[in-house]
Length: 98
Length: 337
Image (cartoon, rainbow over all chains, first blue to last red; front, side):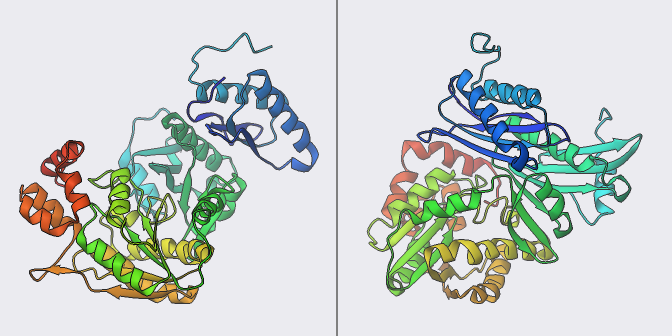
């Protein structure tokens, strides 16, 4: 999916995550993760982000994730929504979503 | 949050906490506990400000609810690089919400942004355009609405005294001439000068985030706070990155806000090792040449006067087809900028 503009999903409330996706022309994928659980879950969260981006075939994007102790399913849901908004897709991309 | 908008209560809530809704606010939100406001926040473009939470409601997630709501609104607008302008006491709250401090004015204000590497990236981009110079690096910050012979004179004067002059053009879209046009006219206007580099001010120099007063009429106390913030960023972060030790500015006979800013600049920048030089304005028939004079001449269709106040590059633009919508706007809008 091609990132055309800013896409945001989620919130800063406890147990949620705020995902912001921006175009990143010529710079590939850059992930900025802010999480209080960085030392414990940082690696796992980054892996989840990478997998999701790969599933939706996103090759160029700036992904900022502010984690407020969210579960994996929440992170993934917010990420998928933000990507769709950034790609200006109003219908879910069922083909790429498992 | 399904109460009808009640601006008065919101203003009262903020007033009790020493805040007020700035004139340039384009969105405001209030958080209610029953019928009482316990928190509020507002937006001005990409800047979050006037955020306050009642003491009794602290720790209940009100701040994160308000900030989340404001961020969602910014997201709907397609804005993702955001700033927060708030009291020093609130710094810790915003840092915990993921914001990074850009600059502080002790006891007055703190500016934060939601990208850790925001200002660093801006500074790195400035540096990548330059080569290290042995002599003096000077600087000028301009709006150029539009670029005039007065601006040219100021830049030429600085260029004579420095090895290189860095000219920063204000990027905010609050002037009659769009930012990209203003920038281009500056580049064209200094084309003959070999030691001048033109940069974008981006969001870090005279912007809605660093010096909102430039675009509003504010009481001088507020102007002073904003000026201190903008100059702290310039002196503390931007100037050192480029080795700047001098800043040049034209004398300001007309605008009170700019006058206050210049005064504070002369007091503050020396603390950062930057010498400030005030250059008297270039005059034509005993009147200082200024962009507002040019805009008035345009408004009056006085092309002869316009031609005498601007370089050929600016004049060529003003009579071109591309300038027509701008000229029309100048004639119909009664704007200070």
